[in-house]
Image (cartoon, rainbow, N blue to C red; front, side, top):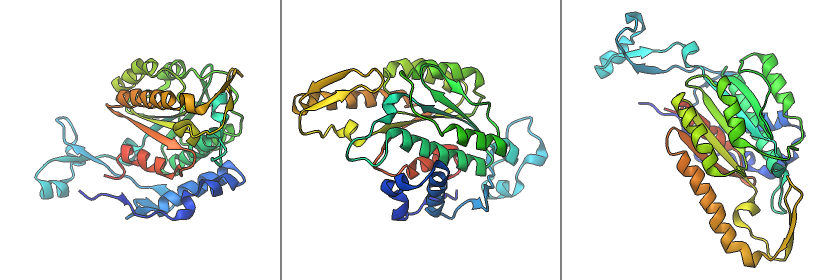
Length: 305
Protein backbone atom coordinates (compact mmCIF):
# COMPACT_ATOMS: atom_id res chain seq x y z
CA UNK A 1 0.00 0.00 0.00
CA UNK A 2 1.42 3.40 -0.95
CA UNK A 3 1.87 5.77 1.93
CA UNK A 4 2.27 9.52 1.99
CA UNK A 5 4.73 10.55 4.67
CA UNK A 6 5.91 13.82 6.13
CA UNK A 7 9.37 14.50 4.87
CA UNK A 8 12.31 15.10 7.26
CA UNK A 9 12.88 18.17 7.82
CA UNK A 10 10.14 20.78 7.67
CA UNK A 11 11.38 24.23 6.78
CA UNK A 12 12.56 25.80 10.04
CA UNK A 13 10.70 29.05 9.42
CA UNK A 14 7.38 27.22 9.83
CA UNK A 15 8.47 25.82 13.21
CA UNK A 16 9.16 29.23 14.74
CA UNK A 17 6.40 30.25 17.15
CA UNK A 18 8.13 33.58 17.73
CA UNK A 19 7.58 34.39 14.05
CA UNK A 20 4.03 33.02 14.21
CA UNK A 21 3.24 35.34 17.13
CA UNK A 22 4.38 38.38 15.13
CA UNK A 23 2.05 37.74 12.18
CA UNK A 24 -0.63 40.43 12.19
CA UNK A 25 -3.85 38.40 12.21
CA UNK A 26 -5.37 34.93 12.46
CA UNK A 27 -6.00 34.62 8.74
CA UNK A 28 -2.32 35.10 7.92
CA UNK A 29 -1.29 32.76 10.74
CA UNK A 30 -3.63 30.09 9.35
CA UNK A 31 -2.21 30.41 5.84
CA UNK A 32 1.33 30.36 7.26
CA UNK A 33 0.71 27.11 9.14
CA UNK A 34 -1.14 25.36 6.33
CA UNK A 35 1.50 26.38 3.78
CA UNK A 36 4.23 25.11 6.08
CA UNK A 37 2.48 21.82 6.56
CA UNK A 38 1.88 21.26 2.87
CA UNK A 39 5.50 22.07 2.07
CA UNK A 40 6.51 19.22 4.35
CA UNK A 41 4.46 16.55 2.62
CA UNK A 42 6.29 14.10 0.40
CA UNK A 43 4.34 12.86 -2.64
CA UNK A 44 1.53 15.17 -1.62
CA UNK A 45 -2.08 14.11 -2.34
CA UNK A 46 -3.02 17.78 -2.76
CA UNK A 47 -4.03 19.22 -6.11
CA UNK A 48 -4.50 22.96 -6.42
CA UNK A 49 -6.61 24.40 -3.64
CA UNK A 50 -8.41 21.23 -2.61
CA UNK A 51 -7.74 17.62 -1.76
CA UNK A 52 -8.77 14.84 -4.12
CA UNK A 53 -9.33 11.89 -1.84
CA UNK A 54 -10.36 8.39 -2.85
CA UNK A 55 -10.80 5.49 -0.44
CA UNK A 56 -11.48 1.77 -0.75
CA UNK A 57 -13.21 -0.66 1.57
CA UNK A 58 -13.85 -4.38 1.44
CA UNK A 59 -16.83 -5.53 -0.62
CA UNK A 60 -19.91 -6.36 1.44
CA UNK A 61 -22.94 -8.41 0.28
CA UNK A 62 -25.48 -6.02 -1.20
CA UNK A 63 -22.95 -3.55 -2.66
CA UNK A 64 -23.53 -2.68 -6.31
CA UNK A 65 -21.25 -4.63 -8.65
CA UNK A 66 -20.47 -1.47 -10.61
CA UNK A 67 -18.69 -0.07 -7.54
CA UNK A 68 -16.15 -2.93 -7.43
CA UNK A 69 -12.63 -1.95 -8.46
CA UNK A 70 -11.71 -4.82 -10.78
CA UNK A 71 -8.14 -3.60 -11.25
CA UNK A 72 -7.60 -3.81 -7.49
CA UNK A 73 -9.15 -7.29 -7.56
CA UNK A 74 -6.67 -8.38 -10.26
CA UNK A 75 -3.77 -7.19 -8.10
CA UNK A 76 -4.92 -8.45 -4.71
CA UNK A 77 -7.44 -11.22 -5.45
CA UNK A 78 -9.81 -9.43 -3.05
CA UNK A 79 -12.98 -7.50 -3.80
CA UNK A 80 -12.81 -3.80 -2.95
CA UNK A 81 -15.48 -1.12 -3.35
CA UNK A 82 -14.42 2.31 -4.54
CA UNK A 83 -16.09 5.06 -2.51
CA UNK A 84 -17.19 8.20 -4.25
CA UNK A 85 -15.73 11.51 -3.10
CA UNK A 86 -19.00 12.59 -1.48
CA UNK A 87 -18.93 9.40 0.61
CA UNK A 88 -15.44 10.04 1.92
CA UNK A 89 -15.69 13.70 2.90
CA UNK A 90 -15.58 14.11 6.65
CA UNK A 91 -17.63 16.05 9.16
CA UNK A 92 -15.39 17.68 11.78
CA UNK A 93 -16.61 19.24 15.03
CA UNK A 94 -14.09 21.60 16.65
CA UNK A 95 -14.36 22.60 20.32
CA UNK A 96 -12.17 25.43 21.61
CA UNK A 97 -11.76 26.22 25.31
CA UNK A 98 -12.30 29.95 25.92
CA UNK A 99 -11.78 29.91 29.69
CA UNK A 100 -9.65 32.65 31.22
CA UNK A 101 -6.88 30.18 32.09
CA UNK A 102 -6.10 30.02 28.36
CA UNK A 103 -4.76 33.59 28.63
CA UNK A 104 -1.67 32.44 30.52
CA UNK A 105 1.78 33.12 29.07
CA UNK A 106 5.01 32.63 31.00
CA UNK A 107 8.15 34.66 30.35
CA UNK A 108 9.63 31.92 28.17
CA UNK A 109 6.70 31.73 25.74
CA UNK A 110 5.93 33.99 22.79
CA UNK A 111 2.16 33.40 22.80
CA UNK A 112 -0.64 32.88 25.27
CA UNK A 113 -2.32 29.49 25.18
CA UNK A 114 -5.38 31.22 23.73
CA UNK A 115 -3.51 32.83 20.81
CA UNK A 116 -1.69 29.56 20.15
CA UNK A 117 -4.90 27.48 20.22
CA UNK A 118 -7.00 29.79 18.06
CA UNK A 119 -4.16 30.13 15.53
CA UNK A 120 -4.17 26.36 15.27
CA UNK A 121 -7.97 26.21 15.02
CA UNK A 122 -7.87 28.84 12.25
CA UNK A 123 -5.36 26.67 10.38
CA UNK A 124 -7.61 23.64 10.77
CA UNK A 125 -10.63 25.57 9.50
CA UNK A 126 -8.69 26.72 6.44
CA UNK A 127 -7.38 23.23 5.78
CA UNK A 128 -10.81 21.62 6.16
CA UNK A 129 -12.36 24.25 3.92
CA UNK A 130 -9.79 23.55 1.21
CA UNK A 131 -10.46 19.83 1.26
CA UNK A 132 -14.21 20.36 1.36
CA UNK A 133 -14.78 18.73 4.73
CA UNK A 134 -17.78 20.08 6.66
CA UNK A 135 -16.71 21.85 9.86
CA UNK A 136 -18.38 23.29 12.93
CA UNK A 137 -16.90 25.41 15.71
CA UNK A 138 -18.05 25.50 19.33
CA UNK A 139 -16.60 27.33 22.33
CA UNK A 140 -16.19 25.69 25.73
CA UNK A 141 -16.94 27.85 28.74
CA UNK A 142 -19.59 27.80 31.46
CA UNK A 143 -21.82 26.39 28.73
CA UNK A 144 -21.35 25.36 25.11
CA UNK A 145 -21.55 28.10 22.51
CA UNK A 146 -22.06 26.58 19.08
CA UNK A 147 -21.73 28.81 16.03
CA UNK A 148 -23.73 26.64 13.61
CA UNK A 149 -24.06 23.13 12.23
CA UNK A 150 -21.22 21.71 10.09
CA UNK A 151 -21.07 23.06 6.55
CA UNK A 152 -18.71 23.33 3.59
CA UNK A 153 -19.99 26.71 2.38
CA UNK A 154 -17.49 29.55 1.97
CA UNK A 155 -19.78 31.91 3.88
CA UNK A 156 -19.81 29.44 6.76
CA UNK A 157 -15.99 29.23 6.74
CA UNK A 158 -15.69 33.03 6.93
CA UNK A 159 -18.26 33.13 9.74
CA UNK A 160 -16.22 30.66 11.81
CA UNK A 161 -12.97 32.52 11.16
CA UNK A 162 -14.62 35.76 12.29
CA UNK A 163 -15.85 34.04 15.47
CA UNK A 164 -12.24 33.41 16.52
CA UNK A 165 -11.68 37.15 16.91
CA UNK A 166 -12.76 37.23 20.53
CA UNK A 167 -11.35 37.13 24.04
CA UNK A 168 -10.88 34.08 26.21
CA UNK A 169 -12.95 35.30 29.11
CA UNK A 170 -15.12 32.53 30.53
CA UNK A 171 -14.87 32.22 34.31
CA UNK A 172 -15.20 28.45 34.10
CA UNK A 173 -14.40 25.65 31.71
CA UNK A 174 -16.99 22.89 31.99
CA UNK A 175 -15.51 20.60 29.39
CA UNK A 176 -17.54 17.47 30.15
CA UNK A 177 -20.83 19.40 30.31
CA UNK A 178 -20.09 21.20 27.03
CA UNK A 179 -19.10 17.91 25.43
CA UNK A 180 -22.45 16.47 26.51
CA UNK A 181 -24.30 19.45 25.01
CA UNK A 182 -22.61 18.78 21.68
CA UNK A 183 -23.78 15.15 21.47
CA UNK A 184 -27.16 15.84 19.77
CA UNK A 185 -25.30 17.65 16.96
CA UNK A 186 -22.64 15.01 16.33
CA UNK A 187 -23.10 12.80 13.29
CA UNK A 188 -22.13 9.14 13.13
CA UNK A 189 -18.53 8.52 12.02
CA UNK A 190 -17.53 12.16 12.30
CA UNK A 191 -14.44 13.63 13.95
CA UNK A 192 -14.29 15.68 17.13
CA UNK A 193 -11.27 17.89 17.84
CA UNK A 194 -10.93 19.49 21.28
CA UNK A 195 -8.41 22.26 22.05
CA UNK A 196 -8.08 22.99 25.77
CA UNK A 197 -5.72 23.21 28.73
CA UNK A 198 -7.96 20.53 30.30
CA UNK A 199 -8.32 21.93 33.80
CA UNK A 200 -11.00 19.38 34.55
CA UNK A 201 -11.09 16.07 36.41
CA UNK A 202 -10.12 13.51 33.79
CA UNK A 203 -12.72 10.96 34.93
CA UNK A 204 -15.52 13.41 34.11
CA UNK A 205 -14.64 12.90 30.45
CA UNK A 206 -14.92 9.11 30.56
CA UNK A 207 -18.66 8.69 29.84
CA UNK A 208 -18.65 11.37 27.14
CA UNK A 209 -15.74 9.78 25.29
CA UNK A 210 -17.44 6.39 25.54
CA UNK A 211 -20.62 7.84 24.03
CA UNK A 212 -18.63 9.37 21.17
CA UNK A 213 -17.07 5.99 20.46
CA UNK A 214 -20.53 4.40 20.28
CA UNK A 215 -21.24 6.92 17.51
CA UNK A 216 -18.05 5.58 15.85
CA UNK A 217 -16.46 9.02 16.07
CA UNK A 218 -12.73 9.69 15.94
CA UNK A 219 -11.67 11.99 18.80
CA UNK A 220 -8.49 14.06 19.08
CA UNK A 221 -7.78 15.90 22.32
CA UNK A 222 -5.16 18.65 21.93
CA UNK A 223 -3.81 19.56 25.37
CA UNK A 224 -2.40 23.11 25.16
CA UNK A 225 0.24 23.83 27.79
CA UNK A 226 2.54 26.74 28.50
CA UNK A 227 6.15 25.55 29.03
CA UNK A 228 6.06 26.67 32.68
CA UNK A 229 2.92 24.63 33.35
CA UNK A 230 4.76 21.49 32.31
CA UNK A 231 8.21 22.09 33.77
CA UNK A 232 7.32 24.43 36.65
CA UNK A 233 10.81 25.94 36.27
CA UNK A 234 10.22 28.95 38.52
CA UNK A 235 13.19 29.82 40.74
CA UNK A 236 12.21 32.65 43.10
CA UNK A 237 9.23 32.98 45.39
CA UNK A 238 6.19 33.76 43.25
CA UNK A 239 2.64 35.06 43.53
CA UNK A 240 0.28 32.88 41.53
CA UNK A 241 -3.16 34.14 40.45
CA UNK A 242 -5.88 31.77 39.31
CA UNK A 243 -7.09 33.45 36.13
CA UNK A 244 -10.65 32.14 36.35
CA UNK A 245 -11.33 32.86 40.05
CA UNK A 246 -8.70 35.60 40.73
CA UNK A 247 -7.60 33.64 43.80
CA UNK A 248 -3.96 34.40 44.72
CA UNK A 249 -1.34 32.45 46.62
CA UNK A 250 2.33 33.00 47.55
CA UNK A 251 4.59 29.98 47.34
CA UNK A 252 8.16 28.82 47.09
CA UNK A 253 8.63 26.77 43.91
CA UNK A 254 11.21 24.45 45.49
CA UNK A 255 8.69 23.32 48.11
CA UNK A 256 6.00 22.28 45.62
CA UNK A 257 7.91 21.41 42.45
CA UNK A 258 8.06 17.66 43.03
CA UNK A 259 4.42 17.36 44.11
CA UNK A 260 3.30 19.54 41.20
CA UNK A 261 5.25 17.42 38.70
CA UNK A 262 3.68 14.25 40.06
CA UNK A 263 0.17 15.68 39.88
CA UNK A 264 0.46 17.10 36.37
CA UNK A 265 1.94 13.84 35.07
CA UNK A 266 -0.81 11.87 36.82
CA UNK A 267 -3.48 14.12 35.30
CA UNK A 268 -2.05 13.79 31.79
CA UNK A 269 -1.67 10.05 32.28
CA UNK A 270 -5.35 9.74 33.19
CA UNK A 271 -6.42 11.60 30.04
CA UNK A 272 -4.05 9.50 27.94
CA UNK A 273 -5.57 6.31 29.39
CA UNK A 274 -9.07 7.51 28.50
CA UNK A 275 -7.92 7.95 24.89
CA UNK A 276 -6.64 4.40 24.49
CA UNK A 277 -9.47 3.37 22.15
CA UNK A 278 -10.47 5.33 19.01
CA UNK A 279 -9.15 8.56 20.50
CA UNK A 280 -5.84 10.34 20.49
CA UNK A 281 -4.26 12.60 23.08
CA UNK A 282 -1.75 15.16 21.81
CA UNK A 283 0.20 17.44 24.17
CA UNK A 284 1.20 20.75 22.58
CA UNK A 285 3.64 23.15 24.19
CA UNK A 286 3.22 26.80 23.14
CA UNK A 287 6.96 27.03 22.41
CA UNK A 288 6.75 24.29 19.78
CA UNK A 289 5.20 24.69 16.35
CA UNK A 290 1.54 23.65 16.13
CA UNK A 291 2.20 22.46 12.58
CA UNK A 292 2.49 18.80 13.66
CA UNK A 293 -1.11 18.83 14.91
CA UNK A 294 -2.26 18.89 11.28
CA UNK A 295 -0.25 15.73 10.69
CA UNK A 296 -1.97 14.04 13.62
CA UNK A 297 -5.33 14.93 12.09
CA UNK A 298 -4.38 13.59 8.67
CA UNK A 299 -3.06 10.36 10.15
CA UNK A 300 -6.37 9.88 11.92
CA UNK A 301 -8.23 10.90 8.78
CA UNK A 302 -6.36 8.11 6.92
CA UNK A 303 -5.22 10.45 4.16
CA UNK A 304 -1.68 9.30 4.79
CA UNK A 305 -2.40 5.60 4.31
